[in-house]
Length: 162
Image (cartoon, rainbow, N blue to C red; front, side, top):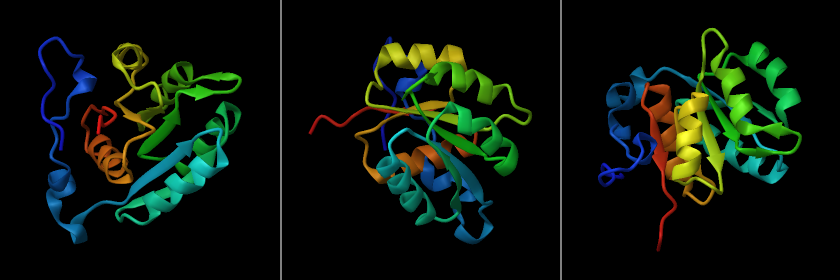
C-alpha cells in the first residue's frame, strides 16, 4: 500500500485508506460494488471486466467504448464506481467526469490514464474525480482503488518505477 506522499504533492497523490478495512474487512458482510468501465479499447474493457468480476464483492455491471454509450449505461446499471478512461475519442474524460458526478446519486469516479501525473490529478480534482489510477498499475492496485473509492476515499496510484 502507498504511504502519504511527500510535502507539496496533491491530495490525489497519496492513499489514506487501508483496502483490507474497506467494508469492514469481512468478505461475507461486504456490500456488492457495482462497477462500470469506460475505455475505447475493447481489450482493456474485457481485461478490466474479468479482473473486477474475479474479485467479489466487485461486479462489473457494464462497459462502454465512448461517452455516448455512458449516459444510458449509467441510468440502466446505477453503478457505485465508474472507471473512466481520460483519453477517449470524441470525448473529454474530464467533462465526462463532471457529467457523471452530476448524477444523483453520484457514483465514485476513477480516472484511468497513462498520464496519471500531478497535472491530471489537479484537473481531476476540479472535475470531481475521486481518484486516478495509472493504466500501468497492477490489477491488484486497480481493484484496491475501486474498493477504496466505493468506501468513500479519494485516492491515486502512481506508476511503479521498478
